[in-house]
Length: 532
Image 1 (cartoon, one colour):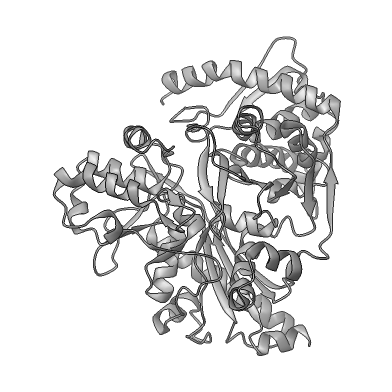
Image 2 (tube, rainbow, N blue to C red):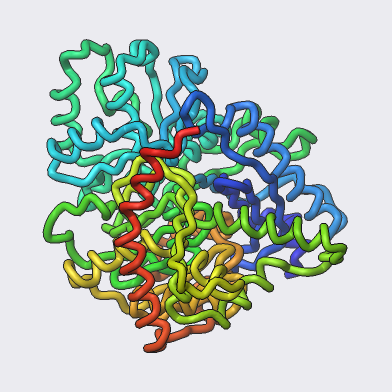
């Protein structure tokens, strides 16, 4: 059957993911082949001290991304896109969106990037004996209680971005278990919120006198393979402003970007893991058993089918790299250099391979926001060097790429050296892995583990979300496990390149990370002193 016939017969699935800087859509066939793409660029706003995206921009971005995809498909295949087999919505995890009984927002969307929840996270971590990171939805909700936010009396539904978009498209107040595990702790045996902790939270907040309890306002937890509702007429109009898209399409459970990353890298079985490198960077390791104790640096979340997963999450990834890239681009254009057709990122990344293994003594922190792993609630981008450091472009870029993995490396050290977590395979994905053998080489050295990058590495989250939608149509119906489905249907013949760590880079990265740890005092002082 031709690709055109697949589209006409709706033997396709659509994944849409709201990332930090781009909203992306991917249409695939049921073997995972990409048939069309769409995207929309956006940026978060720091408004009144809160990192947010206005609701108007969320809706406009969704429509423009889908329009871009629809036009791409129509141009490529000379047909109108009117039906798809299934849809999945994904987004950056955590944060909080609060709605009233009419589905209207009660407060601005607070993203994962906000770190104004320290008191709430500390109280809940101690009460639950379970790490509650600052960016988790429950930390935001409780902090709003502590702050006396008046809107809570009218609260009917509080959730994350992907669950909110799913609600707008289907009317269903649900989310996937992977996303739910960044809302509130999960019981992986019962595949639901941990009831003891739910009861504990309700007891803690009883004195506030709200008419609702926690389960009343949180989304229902679903697992991969379950149907999570169908596209309503209103939802179809929201998604496709042309009016061509038919209602009635089934949707799979919405997921966070961690879950789609695990799916896109086939890292959903125990002893597998992936590192997603983008605006935020995080490592996900599917564990064989619970950790021995609570680590504030490590999140315990789940795969899209509910298996326990340890996450080392860094809020700050590529933002500072992007800023320096733009500076170099401006300089080149000022000098009259024509960069048309030139991938400047690729040029800079390749140059880093010529740098010293320890970056020549250069050190930087791309901290645009707080960093939970290093216990800093704000960020100041910072570059530091000694008088005898070797400042050149290769070392400069190598330090940029090393530091984008720095906080994740600290979390991985806890998992590997303290918890002795076993890892058979790590897969890298996201834009940082576009240049072959570069960041892949540095990551392998940082975590002392071979790293595989697949041919689909740059497709990332929206492709992973489309796979989860395909699993709804295929594996979920057949009661096939998610790992078995992915191994059989998608990754059986997938090509990839694996790099093992080399001793020189390992030793150089260990030197760099020792400087990184020592320099955190400077970063802390910068936060305290630089406030203009």
